[in-house]
Length: 272
Image (cartoon, rainbow, N blue to C red; front, side):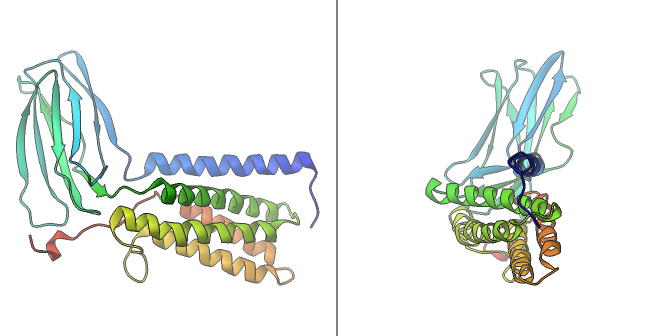
């Protein structure tokens, strides 16, 4: 293992940044909290819409669709997720050139499934989604908790990726980078992560062994692999391979969309 020139080190860091930012963008566009956006053409007019999949518990989730044609109406149906509720069906009319959709607020981790269909008055039917949309309500997380969590996790991803690249290139700093990654992952994922979870969903940890929250579980798995890499990294001939494995595992885990199989209320187990 050797020391890299400044130009090669810069190139390797640039590659790590590109990989990290790409994974962040991928998570953003594939995650279950991303709004459902689209547009339909009704009588020559383009109607755009954005249907929410996450909202704060402080208020109802209100969505508006601009519709200039007053003959257009909408059918909005909803019910609580994992409940014995029957569908609540509302017919909505255009008022002030818009249709307003209101999903009643829920407790932290409470979910509602809903769908919206537009009608043009001449028999035209325009479903706004292929299947019912799930919206989850969450508490407000203070910035003093959220920012360190996001910062530590992002830097851990960046340096973890750089660790793998360093090991592949047979650089001398792989162990140092792995140690920094492990510390940052511990702080961001296992200290500030549960605090974020508590503020948002009123539970510190809902991964294994208490639940199946995928965000918690993938953080734990990644942390374990980095601990193994640090342990094996002290052994001659094994460290480089384990640094690569831990880096790849972390990357694959981060490609799993954030909040998949996240905290949720089972209303069927509660008094309705």
